[in-house]
Image (cartoon, rainbow, N blue to C red; front, side):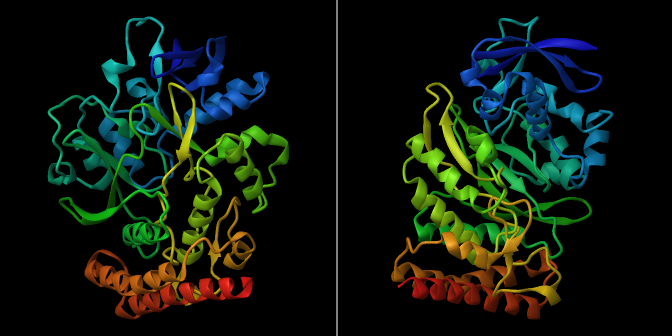
Length: 406
């Protein structure tokens, strides 16, 4: 069955398209209204490739088939496959203001449906994600009892669920690696960012209880407000299609694009993000988890997106016998992992000796968290001590880089 929709950015019409609900595919773009207000990668793509790129954008918006508990989500929400959920409830998200407006419902407005203003509940989604009974243990303040939820477009590999609490949107994100201490790493990253004086998303740790298990999760507020969108780095790089190498050299191209758009403090904040990634051996700084914040009304590139999603770090997905805190691997504008030593070529000393001393002091805080939540991870006392010493080693490596730059 095919239906017609208008892709909206808040109440701005972007384009009209045809959607096959049986195949969950956009089959045709029928009319362009305001392409400037489209997702950046769709605006920048050649017109003959726009349908393909629009489908790519739509697919990346949804829950991936490889996420844990996908089977349970499919069963609870009565869909034949996980892609069906992406287009439900107008394809709304809490990462931007795009939505699918049915052509037949021309009076519908963004103010009527958006999740920044409107209530929802996540009881069913929490149960499907974290186990039966999880929904009732979360501090949800919603009075909404329908199946409306922004969780249909909560993309990414790890289990996660949006919860509305006192009119604020909070993301509860679980673990999914060999050792399961990603939530602890998120809190450590917040503390490092505070010392580095770089915009960041503040995380704290919580436990979601279900009938069969306890789930260690990180919790954070929604990054944007209702008049903003996150534009990820991969979309930003589409402005320079011919120059992308998928290597660390793309850092310079990316930086030039941000400077062209007058993004404040672009180089300083990028440097500090990579300082964080160097310290924590971040294996997951891919082109979808950093970028900029754009105003959806004026289209101004307002600021660097605050740093988030640093959980897959500190060897959490590496077998203990292969832990390496001297030359460990990272990602930096690359699909493949590279030695952290390759990051050294772009790092500059944008921090003070006082900040380095404060970074050293975080080692004890990190160990205390690892000990406190030991029963929820897969870490032994010996492994906790290795992480403690490993973090200190990373700060030593950072100091050695700066010494060589003198």
